[in-house]
Image 1 (cartoon, rainbow, N blue to C red):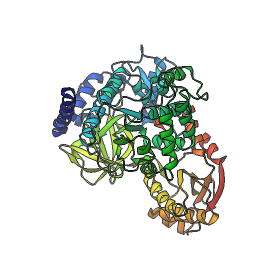
Image 2: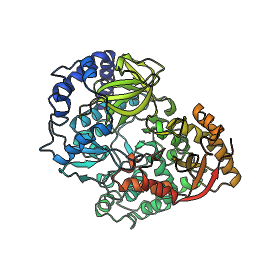
Image 3: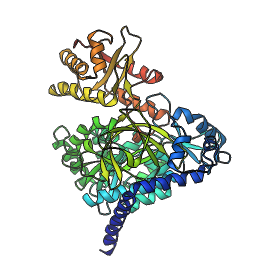
Image 4: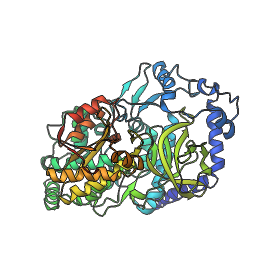
Length: 573
């Protein structure tokens, strides 16, 4: 009892620390910038801008330019090539020990980003803070978490630095693993499953571990909502094999990794026909797999993962599997670093906001309406949209994240922001400009037409067919079943009509933009897209379907083109 009381007190202490931190967010931001510049002011990158030891925000903004990844990529490449013994003083005073890889699925290649101990420390702080707010609403008691987490292929750069996804680096960190234990959510899967080389085998064993600990699972999570949906879609097809393993008390021969076999043998100690029968019966009685998660894991308190932005299209399917279990959107971060914490975990994912953490980096915001000067954290205005600019402890200075956020309010002195969309993911031909969010709205409207015929849109992406005359938008859909030509035509017209950008509508009316084309893909096409992403060094848990495929991503276009089974052109205009 005393131990549980101490755990509750710690949660309240973490919340109180956050409240104090955000009450004077402006001061904390100035101190954070000062700390970053004092540490790294003598580096090659910062020295060229004439700061001369000054660390105040006004001088920093006046001297150091706002940049994108393309601007600093030469420095990052040099760090990767130089190795840990020779890469200090380029962008950070301390050596950079590793490189993390972004998804890179839009441009066709992964981005290198510096990864260091400061990012691990920030992650620990964000995880503890986030857990404290969640645990107030959804207390968990020394249970286990079913986490669909996968290591990426790790390799070394020319200079010998470890390179892999940020998730892989974090799960290799003793400090991070201690944080998971401290927040009462140890993963039910052994490390051999997380770090297994074959993600199909890892997913199989994640599900098997969850079933073996089904009464102890209090939390289901992954980095992105897509990974959770993908896991339970897979379960629909492989559950008889999982049940057979439990009934037999041994792992399927399809899992060929010796380390995974050894680790799973310690969990599958003996046949368990009672558990096998219980799971078998649950699966037979579910209607269209509605409520699958609570049926399998009766003590699950909530489902947790990033559900904003490009993950929103998966929310409906996740709710279908979740039944009455709450969905909680995870915190706001990127491969470059953390931005905000979800301090209102009971808010629906579609309404999730994130209180910016003022000491994990220095933040600026470029007004989207005017594109004017960047403003500081405490200078943003409620209701306005901004592009996020970050300065980090890992060597990024006035770096555009490419994210657009809307300020919804303030938590003490720090803004609470809602993720709107990626700035650089747009469909544009002429006067038109449609964002990732605009595409999502159009797909959701057209998907309702398909849903009326009991056909689901599994996933989607898009591109601009610039070689056509006139150029046109192309939308790719994978559907859960066959749809009649009439339904596809109606969906195609609905997609076209649902792009309401004035430039698009006007150009469509005069045929300045050609008729939208809807291409229906074979079942499993987006699985092939994910396989391609993993083959480039990505991790399944970090996969995000690219919503707009750029011309540089030739391999992805080849995959899509090779799997088209039906096409339709809009007659909406």
